[in-house]
Amino acid sequence: MAESIHAPLRSPAQGQPHPSPHRARVGVWSMWFAIVGGPLAWTLQLLINSSLASMACFPHDVPLAQPAWPPLASAASGVEIVALLVCVGAGLIGWRNWRRSQGEAEGGGQRVVGSGDGRTRFMAMVGMLCSGLFLIATAVAFAFVLAVPPCAG
Image 1 (cartoon, rainbow, N blue to C red):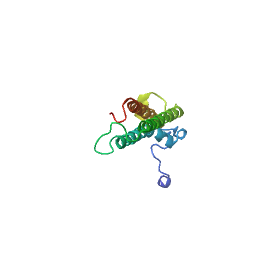
Image 2: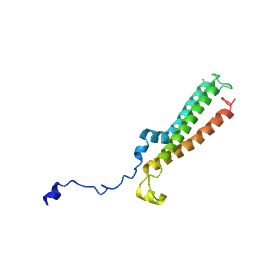
Image 3: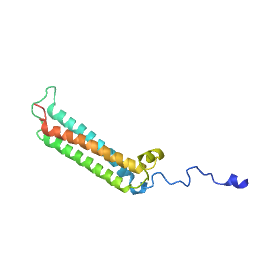
Image 4: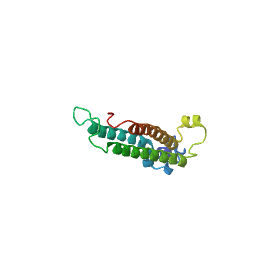
């Protein structure tokens, strides 16, 4: 009886394998960059280009036919290109994370969902999806920058 009082407490999970065994293969910063890099780039390009266009086309109460700042189209295109590069970079890092966590959990999707295994692989997949979706959104925004006149005048 005295041995059981002084024995260390054991959790039910002790001795079980970690649900994310390949977590050391993928860095935390690369995981989060893959997930939030694309949305952050899209948000920043939207805010920056909206601000640039509003200051160049609406400096006062009356909208201008031509931008007050001539390099507006070049600056907006540059912002879009940087945002596209960030989205592509985040997607590539997500893909790299996906490849590094390959084989993290055995079995099909139903077993992994039921057991909670493969968190690193799941987060890598989310990173690839987010980056891809926001790459499309940024490309559409870039198409509008190229197709629509700066002040729509």
